[in-house]
Length: 172
Image 1 (cartoon, rainbow, N blue to C red):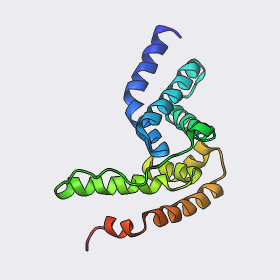
Image 2 (cartoon, rainbow, N blue to C red):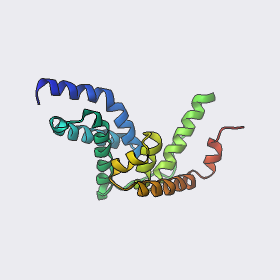
Image 3 (cartoon, helix red, strand yellow):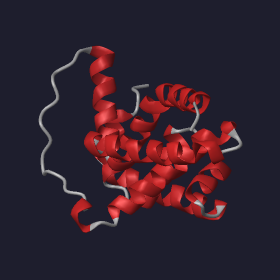
């Protein structure tokens, strides 16, 4: 790559690294794996940087690479998810910050119990803000599959949250 391409890549990396890492965490549930997965996605992007004509599609390319990396990693036997029975107690918080942390933790715990494909759909649809067509393109599946996986994923998330779901709803 020439100097200009390196500079463009560096600017893109700096602008998007936190968002990509956050998406990776939502997909896999582990910050260390999220770092590895984000790095994998950016390395793949760097390798193909000169060949990418539509720079407006970079986010979609990185997102697709990230989702593929999560799926590939989950197939490896040493990457099987392991969960502890009990999480350490969260520090006591006051007011909205404590409630936000509790809500986020409950959501992340619920997402960890949702099957990987359904979790990927939920993260892309509701946390990344993609529509059905964008999610289908990122996962390379049909829009009907996205819709059915969304419905099943939401049901699995509701089951996983159980009584916690009532605690997450704002008081009226």
